[in-house]
Amino acid sequence: MQVEIDAAAGSAAAAAPDPRLNEHMMGLAAEMSDQLTDIMASLQHGSDSARDAAVARLGQLSIATAEAGREQARMFRSAVVVGGALPELVSMLGSEQTRRQALAAEAIHTLAIDDPTSDADNFHSLEICQSGAVAPLVAMLSSTDEAAQAAATGALSCLAENPVCQQMIAGAGALAPLMKLTQYGSDMGKLSAMGALDVLMVNNPLVQQELLTAGAPKLLSGLESMGAQLLREQAGSFGARLRDEKAAAAAPKLDEAAHVRAARDTRIKYDGLRQRAVRMMQGWGDERSTHRSGR
Image (cartoon, rainbow, N blue to C red; front, top):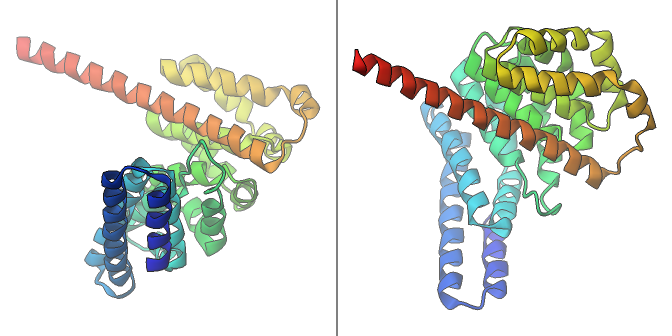
């Protein structure tokens, strides 16, 4: 693990002529290495509470390294994989504690997010899926805990950008619980589940056919006519594409790189819709608060 982190620091140093930037990047790499060592020790030998805290820190570091630059993000994720964190995270997905499940799913989600400007880090999703994460994540979709459902939906949406992972997720039975969440979840849960289904349908006529057979067009038509505005708009768009079998049949099969880009664009579109929904809800909340204070 230290070798992976040091390699990232050396690469950053070679590319940056400013010695102050060099020093900053090397310092960040050393800090990452120290924190990863602590995280791995807690995951493998710590108490349940220590493991929970370690997983939360792992997710925070994943986000922080993504903001620190492409090379740091890639090498951090490589170090996590090489360091043996994935089996520990998969084990926690099967915990009886839904909070622990959600923490592990959120960490996997952050690890699976790649750099949209590069294909160099796309292998992490496949590593995660092949480590056994798919089945417990799909099982979490049927959890009675909304936070666990949301964490699993987010992780699966991101993992499904990889073509092999997409097939694994669909083959593990994700479509039925995602359709159920699209029908019965909260508005945010419906939007997230719809997004996961949309990503799973990218470049995949078998998934499209399964959704048609399972009655997804009727479900989406219901949302289009009765749901909230963002849901109505997206349900209409998704439903139209789902029903257009001729266009799907005529579309050329995408290669792996094009598949990843198309799936990523689909996932990012839904991320943007959820952010819009949050802003709208915050606005409504402020408005209600203002009205209450004025009475």
